[in-house]
Length: 450
Ligand SMILES: [Zn+2]
Image (cartoon, rainbow, N blue to C red; front, top):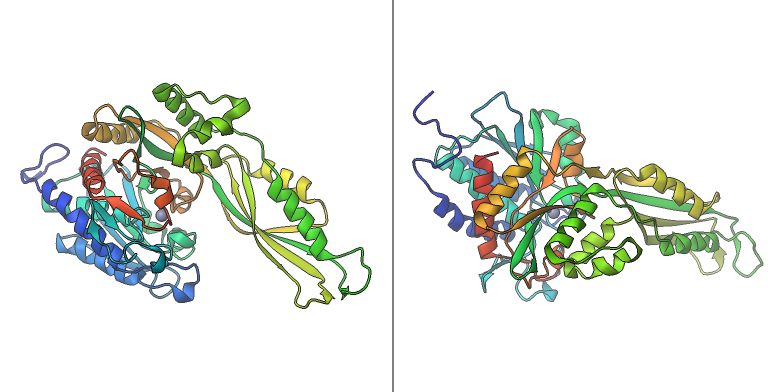
């Protein structure tokens, strides 16, 4: 083994300081590449340019990169592998997506694709979802290579297309068509976790994502008898569909405490004294501020009607009516949810899934979790690291299908008064410069000890 062989501890050259500088310009430059994903494959822009930018940053310090288009032209993904000290250990996957949701410049204080660095923040679409983590990953990957650091095991860096439309032309396509790119990966980190909330007296809790609700989009259809709008009818598809949609939209699904939510609430009780009694859990969770939006949605399944479609002329009773419902289902609840759904809808409403990405959940334990905690605590002594469930979905849904244990870990130390969850897909999305530097230091330590 050469004298150059180093793992973990302090490298001979140390350019972590340079990585902390680079992360800011990397985030800003990534935001300037407009990679808007409207969900309509014909109008997607910039994923290829973003992927080429990432590949160039990696190649610049000596990585061999693989560029893959997933499903369609321009859906760019980039992969690079850093060899670890112990080839017998399974690899760690570090994943980030390159696309962003649309932004309407007229609503913003700065142009959403300016990547402006001002007032201590990097501004723009993607600043927290998730060009911040892409920049931290790039800065850290560059530093590890530059300084000849050998991590304990192989690390697979991946930068992906199409997350914002469910990954059908990104992670899901890659898992189906190019599973060898993830060969040997047993665990993964990505969005949405590792960020801090200030619970009291400046004590921060860092939330590691250990679970995600399932995403199930459902089409409802009611068939009736077509006829003239002037005549009597007892079989109007619009009426029967509306009644079913209203019943479902007003329904409250039962409270189900999953392990991730139970552990999260227990940790918050320990830190703040705030109790979460089962008979008023919604009231108690509402006291969590901005975070209540996410945590509140992880207490039960939800079904929100989002689209309606029927008819083509004012005096024609249509023969069918359709609705789309956005269902979000807790881990382990799919069969029970469907039974409840059928009871609410009744026998005359047809239903079909137009998207169905299952929930996932892993336990908050083991060496990788210990390393996450230690890496955060080294940079923020006194912090507490807690698991939580994301109410939305990420590319982890695809990697879970390969048996990879997925965590949301994109570390950011945030100011107490920042409403972080509102920034996701929000106006004036921005990330603190100090948080990017903090995240780079944490990620660096984490990857050197993973
Ligand atoms: Zn995202």
